[in-house]
Amino acid sequence: MIIAIDGPAGTGKSTVAKRIAQTLDITFLNSGSFYRGITLSLLDNQIDLTDQKAILEHAASLKMDYVGSHLILNGTDVDHLLHQDKVDLNSAKVSAIVPLRHIVNDKLRAVAEKISVVCEGRDITTVVFPNAEYKFYLDASLDVQALRRFNQGVSNLSLEEIKESIRQRDEIDKNKEEGSLIRSPDAFYIDTSDLTIDQVCEIIISKIHL
Image (tube, rainbow, N blue to C red; front, top):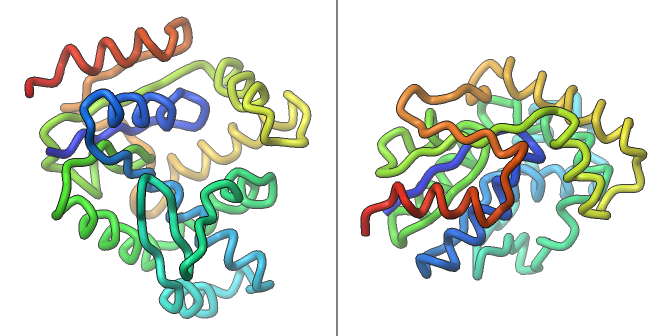
């Protein structure tokens, strides 16, 4: 079974997907972790982010596994490093590289071939798993998105800086050449602005028939 969830940053996708996965006792698969992991490695290895050839060569050299809903990069669990400001500020442009998306999509599909998953991201319902049994699109106002990210306490940016960062990232994501952030016509739409995580999870669970 594949449960696919899309939506912009700060809409609660990751938290909701984790909760749904725990409730249904299936794997939480965070597509963004793969792009963030690649971005982290590119930055740590001082790869020029304007050099697409170098980026693709480096990405192809990485051994990426997914164990217990954590990204394992070259044998090291890097999950706790994926939401640093430097990764936040660069992951959208890295993930916009079309050949790189093909690499990551193949990895995601390989995981989902073996097990049931809840997968969240930007193009999960439209590109990665267009035939998923269940599709959801989570949304929220920009102010709510920024406040949620600010309250996570993982950024050193001000609330206004986070708001602008999210606005720019969503703009990039919505205008990608491939894998852009769009609402799939058959995805169930949920505006999470005034909902708690529990309420969003209740709505999603109510739509899933086990």
